[in-house]
Image (cartoon, rainbow, N blue to C red):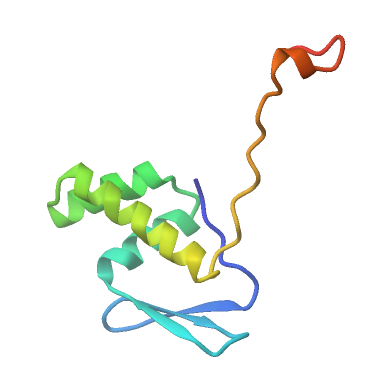
Length: 104
């Protein structure tokens, strides 16, 4: 899962990590070094699992804790509407409503 900042959100490196500015509302968020590591990895095209592994390795935390931290950050970024929403998931139709001749 890669993330993309939505239009109107800019970033700036800080002494402590990264700041995110929502140019539409004027609100900003500060990410600590671990949040910065995770967001950078995801913005560069990495997956949540890759971000979790890197976080666990660099900060000597267990994978379970790192995984929760990554998922929490992603949820917070989505809740604040700083990132593009995920694409809708396609769900297979039950067999009784499949178009004739389609393969599932």
